[in-house]
Amino acid sequence: MILAAFRQALAQTGDPVFRRVIWLGLALALALLFAMYALMLMVIQIFTPDSLTIPIAGEVRGLGTLLSFGSLIFMLVLSVFLMVPVASAFTGLFLDDVADAVEARHYPHLALAPRASLWVTLTDSARYFALLVTLNLLGILVFAFSGGLGIVGLWLLNGFLLAREYFTMIALRRLPPTEAHEMRRRYRLRIWAAGVLMAIPLSVPLLNLFVPVLGAATFTHLYHRLKALPVRR
Figure 1 (spheres, rainbow, N blue to C red):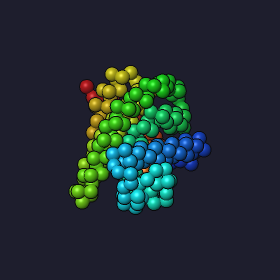
Figure 2: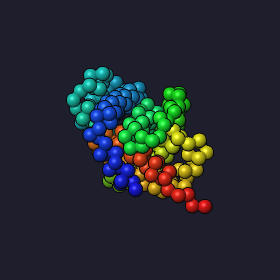
Figure 3: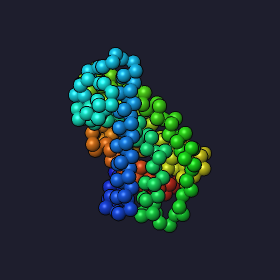
Figure 4: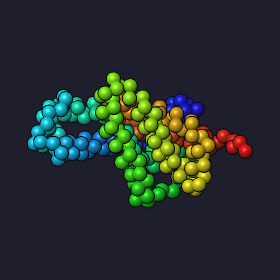
């Protein structure tokens, strides 16, 4: 079911409407990644001496460092960890556009889902965003001292949190909060598995820029597939 939902999402990339959503989503993901990296460099400069040498990027010193070629490469390397909170921020800004495009193509019998206010969606995303930022900054240290094995734990944890966020926000477009949370609880293992399969490619530089859009599309299909299943009493 999960792979079928992903195949449907991937097959829609040729749709002109969906392609526009993909490019807008890619631009947003890249902008959010750049902002996360800029924030990280700012924190480094606040809490360290005037300059600091970090791998690949070299000496961290001002805006020139932020825009240097070596620093941009380092940003892509760090995207292994930074793209997870980026994917979380994406839900509050762009998830509805992706879900609308998917439903217009594959579920045309449905009325257009009402949109929550921007404040509500941003507030909901912010609950996970700070947690995901903290976990993945700690993940950089765990990864460095565990020979890379710590990333498996991050995949499982990030997959759980991202699945919870993406599925809940998509379900809330069609269901009251109590029903959306009950549906997520009922199918929690399948939803978690979908989240892990989203978290893994988020750790692949460059490929991870496309994951927030494809992840939102996949969870939209997954929601409708699970909704069609008979409920066992």
